[in-house]
Image (cartoon, rainbow, N blue to C red):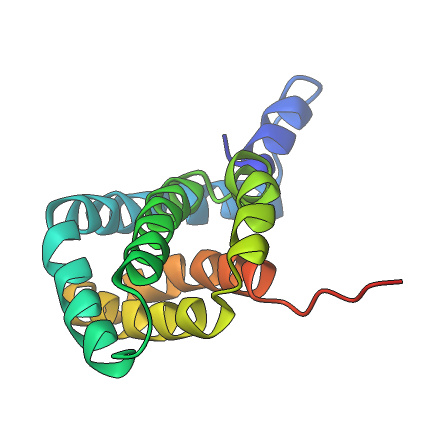
Length: 157
């Protein structure tokens, strides 16, 4: 659930919500429709989005193994699904706890950082083709959170 909405619900147990809280609630409710529409488009256009990414990725990484490219695409497919749900929930912690904590180790072992960065870039381009500008602004922070988490430099101490 929306962390902000949970806090508002708890506040409402003690007193009626005031102006600022009501406005926050109204904003969340108002954006939920756009987020639901974006989620449905991502769901329905998933194949088209990822086929576009795969075609461009294959042309760019001719020397890399097909298996590496397939693995990265599969991971980003999963990431996109989780990002879409995190967007609906407006909850970056959902993404962190449900996906990124365990996927990070797998990605780091495979050493496909360059491929993953390119998949992210191509994916954002494809998403911008199927979602409205407003819908992209709802999804992009979660895709960026995943990219930043997965392709960050690992510093050994």
